[in-house]
Structure formats: structure tokens, C-alpha cells
Length: 292
Ligand code: SAM
Image (cartoon, rainbow, N blue to C red; front, side):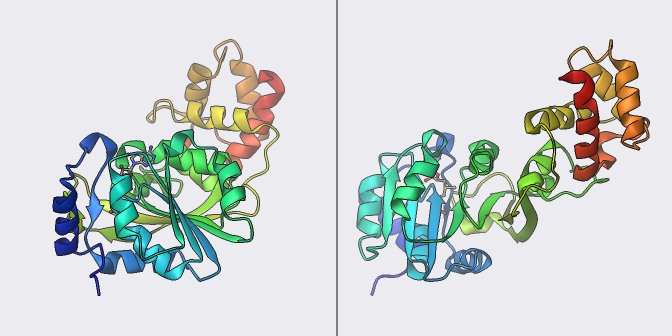
């Protein structure tokens, strides 16, 4: 029987057989520790009823572990050189399918509808290419694909920002963007030694469970996110100063901003990083009256 792909020796053999060289620009750091993969799949609660969506299968280390437990695995891989390798390494798993595509350009909803026709429980599980972590997560969330959640490996520092609570220095517009759609939790810190090649940064696994509806109900979503970004413009400034400086025509509308803060019961001297998502929601609904 073949050893698992995610072992140092088997990975080395596969890379040698195909003369594969890593492309740093594509965030290629492959996992060579089966234990870590088992734990990732455990955190995703994959069963034989689950359809798993993977981004960046590499040589198939995680794909293999998903295929052993899920009903079906669909993996998006941008690097053409990996396709013949994956066809070989995944040949024992008839429930794994690779699509050669940049996930950022994919029609995810359409593809998932087609590929997972009779599967209700969908989960994204991936060891993400770190150069595009945030755009990938935002695409998955903004397009509201019908998944139960997302369990992904990413840079530890980004995981900390995503799962941060108000009042901490990591809390910012990324925390709010992700927590608006999901309940976010860091579930594992991962050492560099489980990758080949080893990345320069520390890694972590986060679990994002999709909320049945967003964390706060707002009248205008795009404006809500504009207010959030404006509030974190300069972190040392007060919420009032940030809104005045960063909202369109904020200076002329200072009195309206003060009024909105007062109606939303938010002290104008507070900093953006102390506001909860619910407070941002209340504030953006008040500001909307004078900005839209
Ligand atoms: N899943 C494998 C593992 O854990 O060993 C590989 C993970 S590696 C960190 C990231 C993978 O994502 C690489 O295979 C890379 O080629 C692929 N990738 C990079 N950018 C991508 C994109 N925009 N769309 C799809 N795949 C991408």
C-alpha cells in the first residue's frame, strides 16, 4: 500500500518523479504531516455526507485526506504543472475532482450547484496560498456560497486579526468583514516544520461557521462597510475624527456625524477599535440619513 502523500518521503518521491519546482509567487508550501491534516479535517467535521471544496490542492496532501472522509471533493488549482501529478496521486480516489482554475476567477455558485447537486452539507477546507488569503476569503463570503463553513490554514497574524474581539489591537475592518458573515475561531497554531518548503511566517487554522443571517441587520451593507473602513482610517484618532476625515464630504458634514454618533449613543471620543459590530450597524444606519 502507498504511504499517505503528506509524509516527507512520499512528497519527496513525487516531487522528484515529476521534477517539480516550487513557485513562491503561487504560495506553494506543501503539508508533509498527516497528523495536522487529520486534525484539520476533524475541525471541519467532514462526514460521508459532506461535499468538500478545496482551494489549491498542490500535490494532493489534503485532498487525499478529504477524499477518504467526504462524499466528494472538488479542488481548484491554478498551476497547470500540478495537473498530471494530481491525476496520478489522486487516482485511488474516484470521489476527488480537480478543476484547473484561478479560484478568484471561478463562478463558484454555478460550479457548486453543478458539482454538488445532491449534497446539502458543503464545507471549504484548504491550506490557502498566503499571498491571496484575504481576497479568497472575501470572495467566498461575499458571494454567499451555500457552505456550512470554512476551515483554512493561513498566516497566524491574519488569523489573529480575523478572530479578534473589540478592544484588542488586532481588531479592525478585516475582523468585522469576516465576523459579519461568520463566527470565527482560531482552532490550531501550526509550526513551520510541517511544510515543504517552510514558510517565513507562522501559521494557524481558523474555523469560520456561517451565520444563518449576518451578525447585524443594516439598511445598506455597502455603506456599513464604508463606515467601518473610515472608522479605522487612523487607529490613534477618535471615531469622530476618522469619520470626518475619511467619509466623503465628512468635513462639511461634521454636525451630522456628531448627531449620528449621539443618536447611536456612541461617545465621539472613542476609537473605532472599541466598537462592536452591532454599534457599527447602529451608527451606519444613523449616518445613512445624511450620506445617502
Ligand atoms: N493543499 C496543498 C497542501 O496543503 O500541501 C497545497 C497548499 S499550497 C499552500 C497553495 C496551493 O494553492 C498551491 O498548490 C498553489 O499552486 C495553489 N494556488 C495559488 N493561487 C491559487 C489560485 N488563485 N487559485 C487556485 N489555486 C491557487
